[in-house]
Amino acid sequence: MPTPRSLLLASALIAGVAMLPPTARAQDYYAARSGLAAAVGVGASSAGITCSPRCNGDRSTGPTFTLRGVANVTPQLAVVVEANSFYQSVSREEGAGRWQLTWVTLGGMWYPTEEGDAYVRVGFGAAIVHVHATFPTVGALDLNTRDVGLIIGVGRDYRLSDNFGFTVHADYMMTPKSTGYLYAVDSGAKVGADVINLGIAAIVF
Image 1 (cartoon, rainbow, N blue to C red):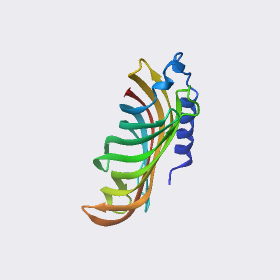
Image 2: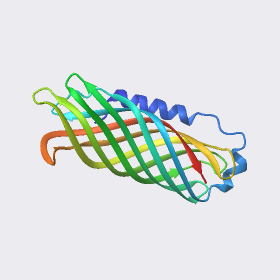
Image 3: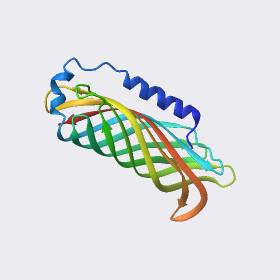
Image 4: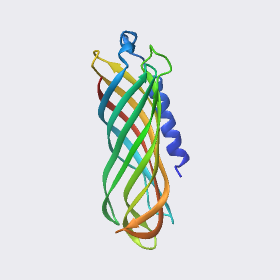
């Protein structure tokens, strides 16, 4: 499970983005929130792993890449398909490896008002985790897990024209502890992960 510290940090980032000032011309563009849209972006993230039995899993910082497809159902509600991938190479005394954490989710995005440009969102899907973890009794292992994934977040759109803009977003992604596989063999360890992401993405409407 995620640590209280990671939940507190995620909450602070989400609250901070939620309070960002709106665009001066947001009311001029709300009617354009229809049809399809796409976004691609990058973020700065903090990722953590949890293991049973206990492993050396200090949080790691690195980039998260985001690809988002949006189908606007109404000016206030959209269906979102999204892929987020965190990547960081790790090098410690116990050996070198990498963390590669990917969430592919389907969810919803809700704008509280038609005229506003702030939104909240939630998505469910699959999480694929590859981590380099160090266990006290067996040393460093590269483990792979697959399980359900959750993403929650907030954001705010900044429209530069009817067809182009950018969005700033804060997200929290997590997956529960699942069987860690070592070369397709059950390692006996349970591994979970979470990512706190602050990102920016370009949008094409």
